[in-house]
Amino acid sequence: MGDVLMALPVIDAVARHNADVRFTLVSRAWAKPLARLLPGNVSFITADLSGKHKGLRGLNRLCRRLMALHPTAVADLHDVLRTQWLRLRFALVGVPVAAIRKGRRDRRRFVATHGAVCQRPVFERYADVFRRLGLAFDMDFRSLMPPGGADLSAAIPAFAAAQHPERHWVGVAPFAAHAGKVYPPELMEQVVERLAARGDTRVFLFGAGERERQVLEAWEQRYAHVESVAGRLGGIAQELALVSHLRVMVSMDSANMHLASLAAVPVVSVWGATHPHGGFLGYGQSTAHAVQLDLDCRPCSTYGQKPCLHGDYRCLHGIHPADIADRVEAIITHAATP
Image (tube, rainbow, N blue to C red; front, side):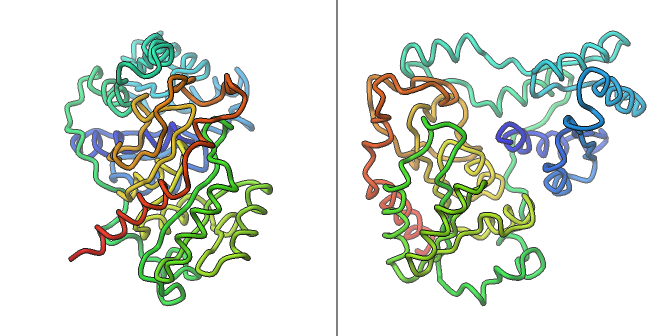
């Protein structure tokens, strides 16, 4: 999910600057509502990788459908086995292809030297793919949402402002795919408690999965001005609509950071095993809002999937909840200043 969300600012920019070019975005079905927010010269085809496009036979079926569009170029922004096979098929019939250069060697060096050299943002690597295909554009993405955010009364009637009168809305997305990127829930709960105690702030909790939903609903029960939206929104489009009205999002190095970036919402990001200089900081986000500890052992991986060398994830447990809450309140204060 994160890869797709990070690609959307680049697709938006290249499509706007090349209005005479027709683009077709191929991705999983969940991304289709977001594709509708892109410029009108971008269409969408669903890759049903667990159904009719599963396996080699399914990929060939997808390839035939794409070839029927008679594309003049193919941009591979993923560079995995499936996309490598597809772009090979196109190259064999003479269609120009270009693929992302992930810089795997540089990333390994980045981890080995514990962040000594900043990595190129992945957005620049995506942009390189289109430029190698001869498309010129400025990387001037701002937001997929209109100024002031989505029309909540139309997108999510249950979350209209009149029903949530607090002056400031803050999102908290405390989970991630790997333990090396998850701030301890008992500490994040203290952040939620402090923000809720302000009285003028509504805290929306974001998560997925049954275990996460249970944790978030328990916080909702314990604190006023706190509401879990886990499992209560109708897909990614509604989630983005709500996010577009936040003053700030608190997120791990996870998809929610990139979702907030699509709505130009500032993110207080929490980093443990990974590092914001590794190339995956949200588009338009500031490292000044990144909460992290300066430890000799980090970053210890590119994606946060490796077990902790010390066994205690001190890079996360050592962050004080006040460090996160202070960053959030500073952004709220700045946003509220005339």
